Image (cartoon, rainbow, N blue to C red; front, side, top):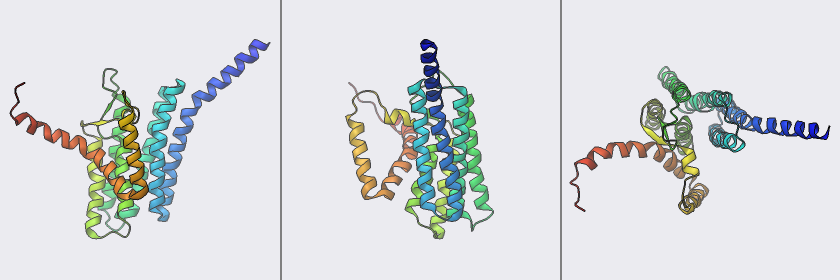
Amino acid sequence: MRNASVELARDSRRRALSALPSLFTLLNMLCGFACILVSISGDYSLAAVLVGCAIVLDITDGAVARLVGSVTPFGLQFDSLADLVSFGMAPAVLAFTWAMSDIDPLGWVVCFVWLAAAAVRLARFNVVIDPRADKRFFTGLPSPGAAGVVIASVFTFSAPLSPDTRLWALLVMLVPAVLMVTSIRFRSFRSLVSPHGRPYPLLGFVVVLALGFATYPAITGCIVAYGYVALPLLTRLARPIVKLLPSHAA
């Protein structure tokens, strides 16, 4: 009887642990949903913060799933549905209410392009799973990284926007949307926060990042978000130039 009770307790604990990643995914979706509601009410800064929280939760749910050994097909599909809300619909609504509500129908079209690109990006990620692929990289800009560009822009440019800033907002939506469906490789967040080898460079980067956000949060956010998007593009553009340079003899 005692053995049966112990086994039942173990099963209950195992089920609770297996449900833990889905709880983080649900909170991720909640942040995206709350962002939509807050954006409609006009509190754009809070809406951007909620998308930022969704990004943290999106990274956390995968880490927790691997930690407890609960990586399942259900978890993968649930995570993608949550991401479509938090990094597809929520940034589109935030950008529209923040910068594009006065430029219909262009604003509708641009925000829908973002939503469609995020949906295609997530669907492609689910069906194109190559066990031989380098896990340190994603094909196409990850939707949380694209959403980070919107967050940084909202904190940098306060509403109401000038005509020039409104044009920049259009580019902030269109460029990441296109990059989400390209074949350009972007570094995964997991490899950035848990690299192999010595952790000291990472710790130094985290300290500098924390100081930057504490002193100049908008500028730091733009450097991180825009830099994450621009670095693979610059690397790709620099390769032909590097090949043209004369090689040095050893």
